[in-house]
Length: 395
Image (tube, rainbow, N blue to C red):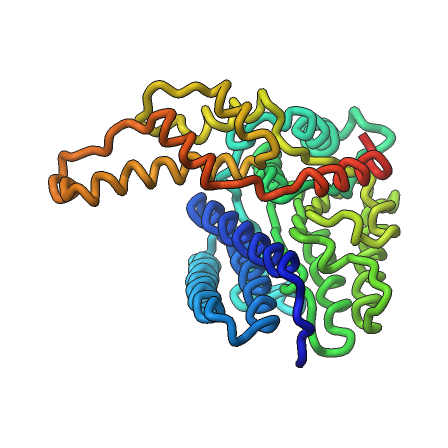
């Protein structure tokens, strides 16, 4: 396959995407959210592969390949951990599994296993309006369905700039309702074989409907929904059929005969303008997850530095200097400052003393980190998100 040489801005954007996905993968990995970490690692790999194809002779290609191998190894490890959980019987009803062998063999497809998220509302800084809508749409109807005679939303779309908390808040809501949480991505559904993608989608929804009928609520989380449900001018028949199958399944959720089944679909995307119009219409709640404002940036710095030994921190000044930074960018600032302080200890040679500790992180460390780390989202892109929100928002 021959790739056209892209502009420098396209290459920079791909590098940014790869870095963003990798950072999110590592964070999810640390929190033990294995299925979502696998999705993010794979997304980082996809972006790096595109960079290699654009300029295979670039000196950076070796660096990209090294990172790809690292991420692939980590994916294999995480899949092994999920398979081990399945073999140990975690969250699996073996009697029911026997009747579902024709739909999903969970040990062969661990990404379709229910996952108990460790993320809670406390891990989501601010976003109070988003939390309120999720409570109204999922938590309250699940707790007292008798209070909602007209039904409630089954499809919720989270959209906005990357690094602002969409994945985190989707994982947190499952904890609020003590439900099954199934994170999937387009790659796990798509197949090169004719007709298989539509069958995978139909099997997935059939499986989830049966799980929901057991009484506990089920959340299907689709990350990067635009890669599966985008509207393209040029597409092969399989992509259109897959999209139509998904829309058909969504229509089934909204059918009156299924209104008491506690099955919800939460989709997240950084590119809502690429979504098919039919898909947008079927998601009754379209929720904009915005950039953090001044007050939220203060909260974010306090949150990320809460367990760090520090002194003389001016949170107001930090918030003023980081206008246009995402939540993920602010975390990178804090992490960079902590790493620099820890590096001093190593370079001094004192690290060999088990009782030695790094000095406290101070304001100068954070200011130096801010100078090194620039915002990952441009003002122009923010205006694009806000324009789309103005047109399609449902809140």
